[in-house]
Length: 58
Image 1: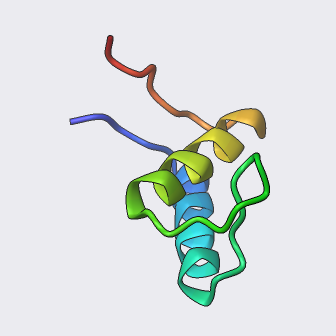
Image 2 (image 1 turned 60 degrees about the horizontal axis):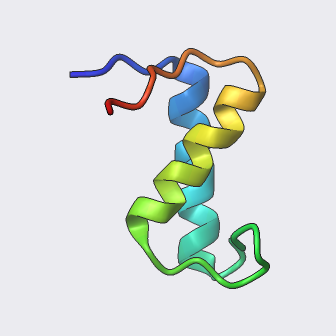
């Protein structure tokens, strides 16, 4: 299983909370309703901030 940093976990937790409140938006500006999409956004934001996030398997 992939190992995520503490910072990445916190970012995903924050985005999940935003999604449940209905405040999380995707890149196109639409409301995010998918749990998987919220996790992907959280990991992407964490990666931009320099957190340890493993590469996606191809």
